[in-house]
Image (cartoon, rainbow, N blue to C red):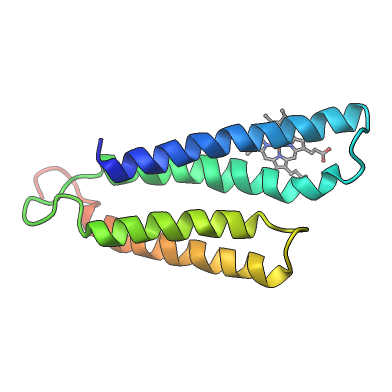
Length: 133
Ligand code: HEM
């Protein structure tokens, strides 16, 4: 597995842990309310599980598994790949900051995530092809 995929997948597992921990906290708090402000954690729970874990796991696996180029770098520009990893993860943290930071930060987070997805689309597009092409 390429190093970039390993980092995408490691990060996704960290988000799985954090997302489930927040979910467990919300669930427990639904039963016996011990933290009145717990609902403020819902956006972070949703962001960590859906984007941090599920989407990130898919992206890291796609980077690894899609057909490689036969000429030049096997998976396209490494710099673009790492830039996308950094932007995506910064975007998740900012997007999850709802309730902690002003709305501009969540907007910035979504913009970073879209930029990261755009970079990956540039890397992935030429690698989506049938056998023998
Ligand atoms: C793949 C894993 C998961 C995903 C994608 C996910 C996603 C979501 C989403 C989208 C919501 C918001 C629902 C809404 O606003 O109506 C939510 C709420 C919630 N989740 Fe999760 N979740 C996951 C795992 C878990 C786990 C493992 C737990 C508990 C251990 C948990 C506990 C909760 C609780 C307590 C709520 C609030 C439900 C309520 O409105 O009363 N989630 N989750």
